Length: 469
Ligand code: FAD
Image 1: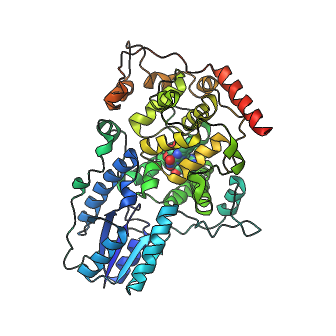
Image 2 (image 1 turned 180 degrees about the vertical axis):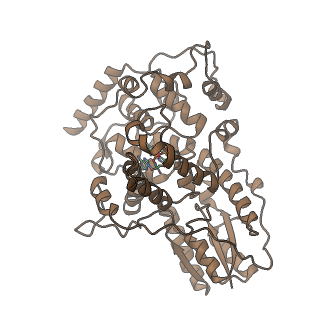
């Protein structure tokens, strides 16, 4: 019998439960569907998806299989393919964001009504959100107890990659990925960002091995340093499923058992990702609404045309660390974790701009965009989220810079030094930005939008007024 394996964000052969089950059953018809959900992705996530698709197409091709690509509503495409190929089952690995859950629930019911066997599997997470429960049978809202609850739960060993993927006798027609133009919205930026991303399953596995071997021991001590490059850099591969969290977990645990100092800390970070998805599953509105409703009355500026917001996006706030980080984001499609916290704090506190606007800008620029981690990260920094930092914890970019970039290596990498010694990365920013921004490398640094002490005082005053309302 033929099974359709519906590929979504699981571009890997190893530890792939849906693919493994389909192979066990007989011939496999892997399909990727460019549906409205894919079309609605931000520019950088869509571009990164395009790269992942191309790599996975090659990987399946090398196994004598294929990735059939079709555009349309997912249910229509799956029904057409089942009819055309005679497939009698449809398998996929689960996703947990609200729109995927709604779509997949409908599709499962409709395909079952058509008489097909339909099954979904665990793969994007280690701990299904509905299985981790507090003593009172509810979801977790705070990270540390969540970590304590899951750390002793066994994570099944990753499944092996298949030796072969049995192909159907004939292949239904597919569309050319190039015609979908998934990278089109990146415009000039695509060539620049491409130089910074590692794409595909073998690259992710090699990076995990390299990280565990060479970097993990220094991870805990150095991960906050902006230029240290000791983190795994696996977030985009995890977001696209080029590697599974279970593979990261087992590799990290092995190093922990061998006594590597930073290994447990790495496991904790991988579990932050699980926690974010736990929150999103139980509170799907975390992306759109203040998690703490009392924050609805806070006086954020909620105007995406506000000149201060534009200057923040362009890396022209006049605060060197904020500007360096925003440029790192634009050029590499990623940003250091601490820099994400500092830029988010600066936007929501010093500038008083709504976290949702910042979250959406990240959603458009991040190749590792992950709706759950992004929403949790923004609400955490803004103070409106679960387990959030208190609002009055306002990062001072200057102090953070002195502490986590003491030799100013990060700053000099991203900010042109009045033309005299602009680094390669700084120049790339000007290659990548839209012409409509009207910025040139020769532009002198800008006056700070706000004085740091004044911005902090204003934020605290706004908070006091809000609290006493
Ligand atoms: P490592 O330090 O090597 O960590 C290993 C893995 O653990 C990461 O790849 C990631 O999957 C996970 N992880 C680490 N830190 C966190 C965290 N704080 N929250 C959730 N998971 C974490 N991460 C994303 O993957 N996508 C996003 O869209 C995203 N947006 C963020 C927005 C804000 C405002 C903040 C503060 C954080 C955001 N993060 C996001 C989390 C974090 O910044 C990145 O996961 C991390 O910088 C990726 O680098 P790395 O792969 O080298 O991580």
